[in-house]
Amino acid sequence: MEYHRDRFEDHSLIVYDKEKLVAVLPAHKTGKTVLSHQGLTYGGLVFLRNTRLVKQAGVLKSVLEFLADSDIEQLSIKSLPNFYKTEAEDGLDYLLNAIGHCEKQQLYSVASIGNVVFSDSRKEGFKRGMSQQLHFEETNDFADFWGSILIPNLQKKHSVKPVHSLKEISRLKQKFPDNIRQFNIYHNNGLVAGATIFETKHVAHLQYISGNSDKNALGSLDFLITKLMTETFNHKRYFDFGTSHNADGSINEGLHFWKEGFGALSAIQNFFRVNTKDYKKIDDLFK
Image 1 (cartoon, rainbow, N blue to C red):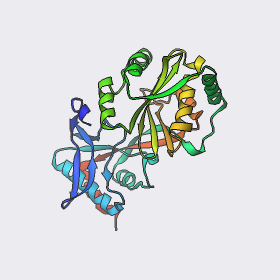
Image 2 (cartoon, helix red, strand yellow):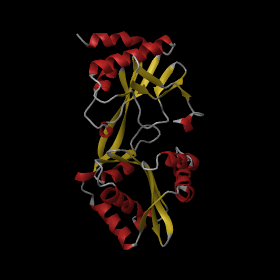
Image 3 (cartoon, rainbow, N blue to C red):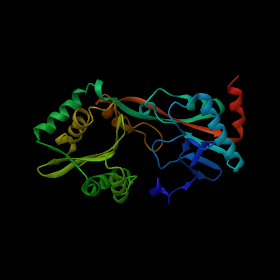
Image 4 (cartoon, one colour):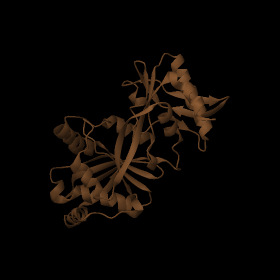
C-alpha cells in the first residue's frame, strides 16, 4: 500500500493476543471515520486461518473499542468476496451486520474456470481472432499497452486514467513478479489489445483489459480472454472479471452481458458500517 501513502491518511491496525499476531486491518482515516483501505480492491479485517467465531468477535470488539477511545465514530469495512476465500467463512459478515448494517453491495462477474460454456458470440469472436492470425504473448513490459491503448481508451471513453500509473504497475510487478502479469495481442506485429492480470492462489483477476478500434473486427478481446481462461489460467478455480458498475452505481448492461458470455455469474461484495461505540453489543451475541 506504500505507493498510495500520498493519497490516504493511513490508519491500519495490527491486533495481538498477548504477543501473538491474530489479525490485521488495512485501513485509512477520513475525518472521524476509519475505512477499509480504499487503495485496495479487497480488504476487511484479516484473521489467522481457523480463527473461531468467538475469537473473531473479541478481535472486532477490541478494534471498535480502540477506535472509539481514539475519537473515531464509525468503521466502514468491506468484506472479502467469497470466491477469494480458501474456505467457507462468513463469520465476520455476520458480526458486522448484527451490530451495524450493510450500507452497499458491489457486484462482480466471476467464472468457474473448470465448468464454463462460452456463448456463441464469444466463440465466434475467438474464431475471428484465429482467422486473423492474432498472436498471444506474455510480457514483462507494461509501457506499450499503457501508452498506446489503455490510457488513450480510458481518457476517450470515461475521461479517467488507470488506477495505477505506468510507474506504479511496473513497481508492483517488480515486488510481485509471479502475481502481476501482462498479456498482449498482436496483429501483423502491431499491438491491438492487452490484459493485466492480478493472480492469487485460486483466482485470476482481470485488472485491466482494452483493445484498439479494430477489436470487434479482429475479435481481439474474445481471443484474449479465451486464451487466458482455457490455457494460461485453466488450473485456477475462478476468473474474476471485476465489476461492471457505472459511476452512479448502476450496471453497465452491455459490459456485464459480454462477461456473461464467458460463463461469468454474479458474486457479491458487502460493505458494512458500524458505530464504534456499539462495541458492547458484541457481548449480547453470545449467551
